[in-house]
Image 1 (cartoon, rainbow, N blue to C red):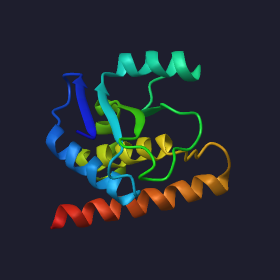
Image 2: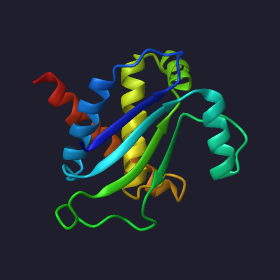
Image 3: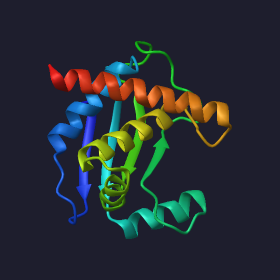
Image 4: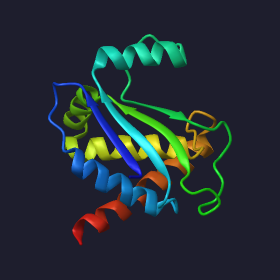
Length: 152
């Protein structure tokens, strides 16, 4: 199974089946249909610990990505399956952000999951404004693609 999902928090109800379908669609949209990744939902305390340990930032964040490779993965087909890494999401943070941004929790979670996936693929919005724009465009493209698959 290309997407392994764990829920290690209890505050927010989640649809893990939909998350799996969405991430599988996102993997197809980025031309990595055979790639594998894990998605883990955690509470805010755990997310803050991870952010402090791995980024040196002592605050909660919405999503973290842990690529298995330092370099950009090979094009699709060269490794089967290609293990991308781990995406960690804090649903409590996502719920607050969804309210602030005026959309559903499901939409916010999807955006964070796609954002994390793109980090696994080498996108990094913190490098430059140009890279941030590039990543935002790719997020929107993948969101549209996943939305189109949902509508089928």
